[in-house]
Length: 369
Image 1 (cartoon, rainbow, N blue to C red):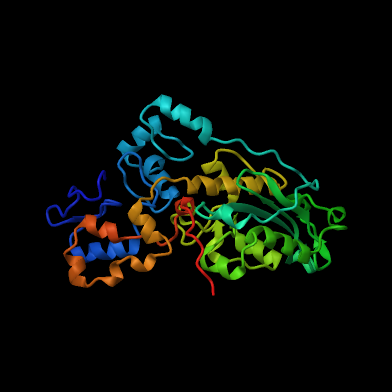
Image 2 (image 1 turned 120 degrees about the horizontal axis):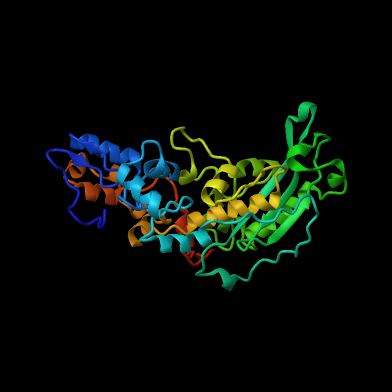
């Protein structure tokens, strides 16, 4: 699909063809139901050959290189496609040049050493206005308490900025006696936690970094100076920290729709799988390293944020001004019946917020009285 305003996709021989996924329907009402349930938009992963929109990157990979791949798309992708980001390039030279920056190497692990870092200072008000929201990535390690180690307790936490610099790292004093250090995964022993930082102090330091001098009320409303928090299975980490953070500021790679499994409802891939598949290197071959995991999840986030598929229309629709959008539920059956496949696609929006919108500058803060 080269131009969403063209009439290249119309009902042919009484069949209605979806301009996004190319499915065909005999009855217009069935076609409309498909559009309502599919949540097609320009933010979905897209085949670089036939330009089909797919539900996730996993479904796109199946389309171009899986067992049931489309022959034409598969043939071209095998010659000119990047196995990591799934983009298609005009020639082998362009592909080779691209892969030098697309296929990454694993960051060096920090092991179980106690890392020194500079105390974080919130930015001044005028610095953030008109800029894109900044992100920090978090990774935690938990140990087990009580019989069989069934209760998770926070034991280590690491935060990095977008340049992969450590901005906070510490071992954390568990609030209950530890019965399982999970050494084969964490690498931790009793010695690491003996003089560790109390949880309350850890919470205060992390919240200072995240809110960045912004009030909780403003952060919940429009973000302000507060930072985006990136992680894999963030709910698990926030539970371990006994801490809340505004949902609109969370970026969880385990819940991001384009990175999730296609054939199992609401099922996530592991961070190890996502890193190997979409960054090109291995992690977690032995002890899990908090810094490696932080860097990997930040790289995944930045790769998704850099996707180039927003335009003026979708930016407006997917921003905080969603009330301005007139979608399927706001139109009568008669109105929908008279709309072409192209027009139906234009009013369709994703059922998730695309991370490419994080590259859009935040609005100036509102006046508070």
